[in-house]
Length: 267
Ligand code: AMP
Image (cartoon, rainbow, N blue to C red):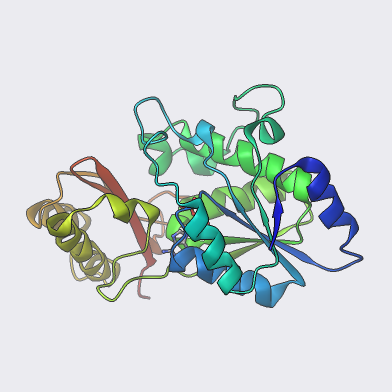
């Protein structure tokens, strides 16, 4: 597998493409089957699928888990090789932030509610890193998970606004056998916390099917053992406001671990 860890090596890959299409798969590593699903879809849709692994400092706020975020590079590379990836991009911070680690792009209106309200720095960090990644690698497709649904829509919006010739491909959330959405942060959960976490999707299904109200869903999440609910809301997924809702989204804490999930509402 070609490990691309400098900008000249990235240029070499681009020069070798000869009109072949490129699918980029942005990740922060600690790869699980959700990430690998994006990679598999990227391999199907484009001639070359290029995952990248980079833990982006600007999307973490002071006091969040930047230092402790799981880093499992050896295993990640093995997993990528196994699914047939030929090249992986491991950018350095100076490649991504040549003028110092700071926000250079602001996310738009879609970033104001839900995640944006509770992690105000987050989407600016995401669009800053992705704008740079897209400019450097010039992908035709970018594979992103519906697991982070607001992020997906914020990035689609950025690409439209900036008129970038890129198609953002949303990939449905991969879940484990208990329905828990796979996440690198699930590694923080102990056995008891895992059991609680695995109930979250079941409450969300009932909320999405209009069997319970927003308030009831929030109360149930606390009753099953979560410590705090940042939000559990039904919104319209084009504007992320409650008008004409078609998607339910949740962010909740078990101890120091914050989990998010979402799903479409039944018609
Ligand atoms: P992360 O490494 O957490 O930044 O995630 C990288 C990409 O993988 C993002 O586009 C996520 O939405 C996507 N992703 C993470 N977890 C899942 C999952 N369980 N199913 C599908 N995509 C996922």
